[in-house]
Image (cartoon, rainbow, N blue to C red; front, side, top):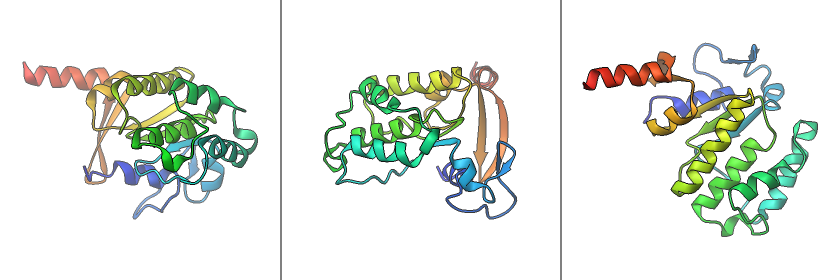
Length: 189
């Protein structure tokens, strides 16, 4: 907690500028080309803010419209079905878990080149967590990049190829997941 994971993600989507240095994605400066980059990014923030008086289906249609030609038309329906999300209800009537499902669908529905997911399984029951992790793996296997932030090492191990450790706002280690877990097991034995 407090290492800088969420801050890093927010800088990448140009929510706010870095306090020092530069952030780049796809070779582009995240602040100078923020609008252009966001067309290629699916983002699930850790603190989700949604329109409580809007039906989930209307929210997804609006989001699809705002993404323009960069959206996979009606793909959100398939994602919502997989998560057993009733999109006919107003978002304000949803539990925390169902609101999280809305965020997951919104992040994945455009089939973006880069997914930035901050604790995507938070508030979800174990079966839905598994479905979300399956969806993330499918995106990864489809060739998309996933920036996945989690405190849950079993989730990281299940979906990530590489892991970066952030401490005090600095990237202090980057390695393949299996190498990190092998080192960890060697220290234990």
